[in-house]
Length: 461
Image (cartoon, rainbow, N blue to C red; front, side):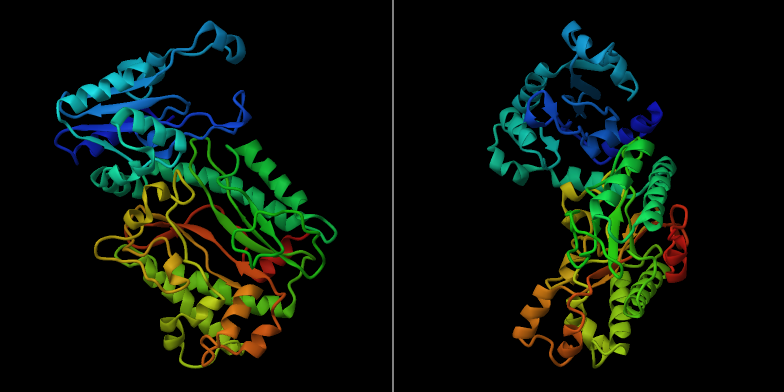
């Protein structure tokens, strides 16, 4: 946990957005893997961590704005628990670290909620993403579980998003810690990826680094020679000389802050001439989009800068033809770059995605595009000092997408399909870094992980 005053000040700032009612926070429970005593690795809800800091299952918290109370509900461990878990601090002792003096057994939560509702006061809560919390809210509030998200408080969502989007110094330090671990993960992969190895030999090793040096991975590792599949979690392919492997992986700090880095590496230590041409376009796109980042610039603009660089590079190689502005405006480039430039990052690797991208990355003034590719952009609105964003352009040759567009003669005025066909088995290339928006510009966080062609090749041992 951070210092007590961090959580006290976070709640104090949140409460300024409300005049009355109550704010309800549900922590996560353990989730059984195949029987109750064998649960999945526990991960606390990120908003609960942000405001209360208690990294344990079976807790809830309530801010009663009218009565000026902050309460944590949870468990005091019994001797039966201690036999299996060892000595445990009391609920009161645990809550004190978050600056909370008033605690009750979790069984008292329903009584507290009923009392607030019976007085006609509004209870604000965030949209749940776990079924067990949907059921809890159904029992507490009398709203059908399948409809509960419709009743989540937009006011609370907007207040939490506004607050969590701006990273404090202690949060930046945690992200930098997670990036130090990611540095070790990615440089290991660059050094030890060999022809004749299976992908799992590298993905398993770098997951071990994340576990040994941090709190494990911040998301399931993507390590694949089939990088044309954007989120490829299969690690069973045999790697051969001449293949390229996309390594999209990151770690969690001990306080659960994320890193998220992507590098594309040559399996035999050297890129082919074709691979170098495509790689350099992606690197140029990433560098130019990062260069544009500063407060007041819409992240959509940074995305479109990357898109135009990609379109221009591919046009120079004969994949595209025609006016670059028209290519990007129409979306023809999305055959090769079918996703958004990046996303917020913090306690979640896709920060606050559970609260809704329409609040995190969009607003009443900035609406989502319905164009293929651009529609997947998770963040489009203006950047602010304190935002931490991933920047991850890529170029991919996806056979199924190529076949579909070719059969439809889609953008045939822009796309040279005969050239594209020669690259059907190319795979994909993606390059990603984590960028802090500063008062006057931006800063790429973490120790520099090799990404220039010559630097990546020099890492191979």
